[in-house]
Image (cartoon, rainbow over all chains, first blue to last red):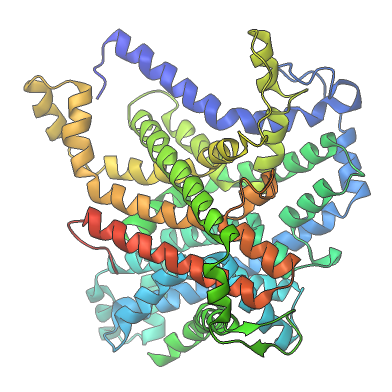
Length: 277
Length: 283
């Protein structure tokens, strides 16, 4: 919309740089602050550039807390959530777009309501149910709870992806003698790979970053995920802010790097699934 | 067909339908913990709730938080989307960067921003005092809600940005060209072409973000814990304290159910008032 005059161009670049600083400065700050180490952390706390490369705080939090264990737990829970969500949301979405049956719109609408329910509302009964099944305070229980968050979104997102694939494609595969399953895996799945990746990325992020369910459903040290573990470290006074920031940096640096590979899928999924949905 | 549907429905039922039913039934009981035998009290919890001034104050504070953070997210998100929709070098890179606040865990957001806003060592207060102003206590009684809203805007705006950006890309360039020929300036183009074209989208985003912010627990809990003096206590925090800290499971469920009902009523009114040209059900 801005005309391509010089003034317009300069304004545009100033705006772009503002957006960059706004989005990226906190990430940068969280990363460089703990690198100042014990000597410079407070004395140089407001220098805008990195003043040192001291890994003391990083080593402290890694060795003196259960941080490595939290890390492992987070990957287990997020990995399991992602796989289960991908499988079941694609199955449900496939049925929703390929068959007519009673209660179909009821099912879709209840998915929407599942989307609207407060996490608190789900957590209270989930804990009760987990206790009766003997899976309270376990990674299994936490994974099931995360699926409650990711499944409705996944179904909604993939529903819109499946709709874009013409039914004739499958029919012609049947004509050629393929079974329903074969047609699904040979013809349909390759076409919805972008949708599946977006659901996967989304589920992984939701599960990996979840704090609310973890706080309520997990209590023992060995089952904590990173957000719960780090928040616990923050509440205990044994470690200082330098270590906390080092812990935060150890979460965002890998996440940002991983995310840079899948940005376009995440963006595509969010936009097509959440809104055009 | 059933073969496909059954496993999915089982999981869906196990994690969403059954728990919701349980939550409703809990709200009719007085339960002191998750394991003991609860006592049936009928609607008593709801009668207590109607008299509970802490609940009603928290309803108000939840609306302040949700309204403040959603409206700012929408404004900031639209501005960023408009910038990211222009042609310039490094645009794809910037699009990626602008999403980062959305993907990092809330605990990292609060640890990082508490350090940035720190009264003694924070870079923001350093700047404020260097230009001769008094340092600001960001999580004080007066400012805690404001700070929580600001951090929420920073973290969750990228959702609005992305959705709006994808909407902008669906608008035909011809519209803008003919508007330019007719002498319309950028502001007029935004107001008379962009906004009307994206009206439905905007209604949907406000709805989604409104629901999410109304139910948001983590950021506020990690930043303020509902304090100081319960000034930032929202409904999810009240539910958490009642259920998990004070072990009033039945009453906690009552607050949770009531909170969901209030939210649904507001959303219903919102949809009636905005009356989107087409209601999005199953797409």
